[in-house]
Length: 409
Image (cartoon, rainbow, N blue to C red; front, side):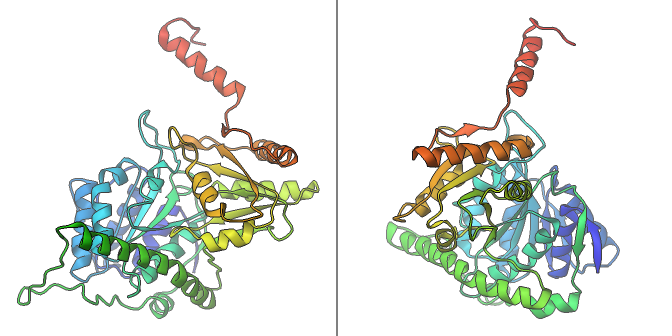
């Protein structure tokens, strides 16, 4: 079945097809459409599940982890400040090794408050122990939820998965989405096998979530790290089975026109589709350029990235986030991954798309020129924010108005 779906509806379809049992939720813009859709389906008997509205995201994620620990399949979703409010429990759930899927609809963090997307919220959670899948299309949102459950519930992994989509640009954009049948999904994602995650009043079992001393703490923390690395290896095999059943490729890293490329763009999220269009335009003008888009961000797919980047001349890393005092987070992670290479490319850092600011085709051309010149000199310029003189003038004008020193029209 093929339908026009928003990214939010695609996420809800993923949860529905995964045959989830329990949905602890709390609404927040721009995620609310996901839980409204699921609630409507439950009301009409299309999903046999229990939905509970909690009083906050912290309680929501706590309930999700506790339910998953009893051996039921759990789905939840949030965004932005909600993800940060639940941050304490994200670390707990990863430590509990409970398999579930949490969808985050990215939105810029306050202050100043905004409703449009960037990736500072989801990247703030990169070290919490959740595996992370990042989507560019609505189809990827639905598929990622199914892949997320399959990966999370693998007995060699047993970690929660965060599926990320951009607020507004993807959450409210309708695209054609292939919706597989329930039978097709059951063949790929069988009913949840809880393993040791079960609850019975007559046979109480300690989940041993507290330790005293650094020795057992070090052991369990490192075991979770090893499980995350194992998830990276298992993901490839799961993706191959997914492609065989559904006909859609889902590599940990998408590469576009990379084989003969001299300069590469690196992006995650829906704005990567703009980079893909820019690659086509640059190719038409004779430039050897390509795009690398990590879908799997935790674990960081180092081996795939090394294979794609080795021997390339230059890379434009476009971060839709900003780590104050450091720069782009993706640039930092990529620099660390490529450092051991003897023939590593020159990395140039750009920060753009903060708070949903557009990145134009002209800016992709300009970034390509900057990287090409840097390759010629062998010197990477300092990181730079994508921001025009006209934008700066507009902000200065607003400041003048706020200060009572400027014209209002």
